Amino acid sequence: MSDHTPVGFIGLGNMGLPMAQKLAGWDGGLTFCDLNPDVDVEGATRADSAAELAKSASVIGVTVLNDEQVNAVVAGPNGILETAEPGTVIAIHSTISPQTAVDLEKQCAAQGVALVDAPVSGGADGAKQGRLAIMVGGERDAYLKLKEPYSLVSDMMIHAGPIGAGTKMKLARNLLHFISFTATTEASRLAEAAGIDIVKLGKVVRHTDAITGGAGAIMLRETTAPIAADDFWYDIFTHVRGLGEKDLGLALQLGTELGVELPLGEIALERFADGLGVGRDNA
Image (cartoon, rainbow, N blue to C red; front, side, top):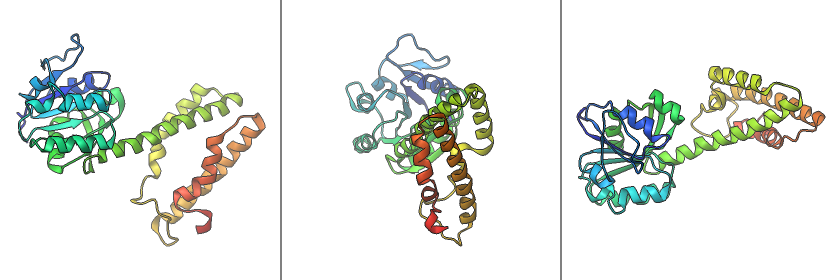
């Protein structure tokens, strides 16, 4: 891909604005479009519509609110497809239904335009730092066309698979994210009942997760199938199971003593061994 390939960006909200600000440093230049007339990106050119933007941009990022807005920006009146030239790549960064991505990709392909679903992870701070993770579903050639300009925004771009795969990966990632948040509220209730300073506990959690990798530290295998006793990972995950079951049991005991309900803790203890692939039947 040429360093002079022009880039466009649509939707400059909480996530889109810092992404566009990074992309404004691309040698090929940036054109942006947003409904807010007051938003601006230094060094970039404003377009009045998605169709106008697509006249000059060969790679176009879209970060809008939902499926309806994505459909409108890509295929609606004054949308990208009204003017996009064959070979244009559209990257949808919004978290949408995988089926929406599949349907739009077919519509775009009929005009020789490539569409990928490319949701991001890392939040606004990650965008400001140029450290977003971007999960791309779609044709590999389209993915490769994104890599150079998006190196300004992301230090981890993954080709997740065919169209829709990027969104599916993002949904799995966010399932973990928000279940973890819910577990955090449960741990905080236990700590508070035990007279522990929750802010100090939070500092410990952030410190140790930065060292160990947090929940992602056990995502080391290519399958979730049970682990055979002669597998390399068997002893490692059996050790993890032992530590986890011991500590979960002690936490639940403390919760009982303090009158704090810990339903996620109970589920975790019940399912931990089988989830790791070293259930008690394999021990």
